[in-house]
Length: 261
Image (cartoon, rainbow, N blue to C red; front, side, top):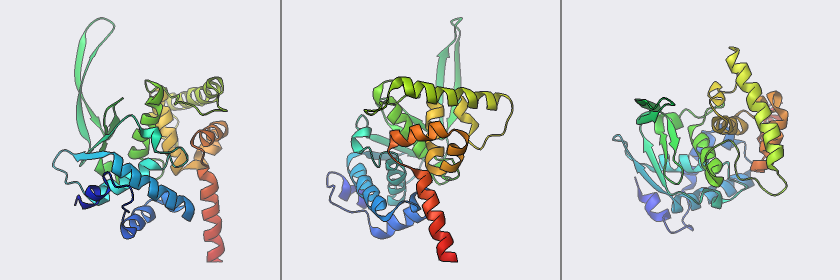
């Protein structure tokens, strides 16, 4: 099961088998709409990613090529135009079979310590590993993607704590990001607080960091929803990721319509 990883590690020229890659891409609509050139670029990036990162499992899960390639393909989509250096500050990926429990210990303003168990589908540690549930990875689609979510946190952490503002490219300013991003965040929080059922996961209202991660999921999987509800934020994310998922989706839909007629 680990033959592919063993071949890839330290040998970036080794290829992911075409059959496994095809199965991975066609099973994920947001990857299947990529152009052939983009799919080739993503495959090369995923191979380099697999050669650089270290995978391990917990909870009795057996590591497989399917798991590793699925994570690499989805995780590298956000950095398709940014490059692998965007994931330079960490190495490890831990995969659980399902949701996992993380013990928490916090002290409130009164000095009282509270201990509880947090049940998670994914978590990204600053400077440390990224942890995901294989069960949740397989649920990807329609705006839910635990891999993209946690990898977005890693991008957010490139310039410090996850706070909803990643390290910006030249031509993008913090003032512009704050104006557009936080206006959308505040509006979304008001909608959730009012009891509205939102197409975008309401978990995005938890904090600016979660808004960035959830909106990144939505940006790549349901770009039509994001551009309809927050067009300025969609344009901002498009400039940050240097990608236009809505254009891909529209082109794929038009091609499908043409072939069917």
